[in-house]
Length: 29
Image 1 (cartoon, rainbow, N blue to C red):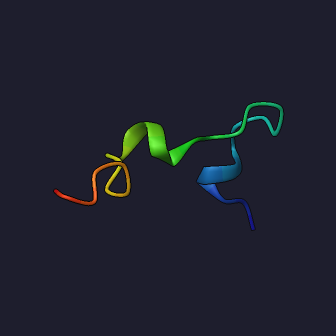
Image 2 (cartoon, rainbow, N blue to C red; image 1 turned 30 degrees about the vertical axis):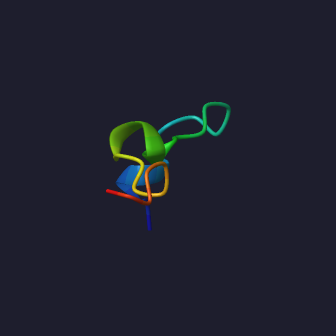
């Protein structure tokens, strides 16, 4: 079973924080 998420090389980890906003960055939001 191949997952489309693991199609990328393990040498380059994916940071979902780069795609998603930082809700924890500003608790006053």
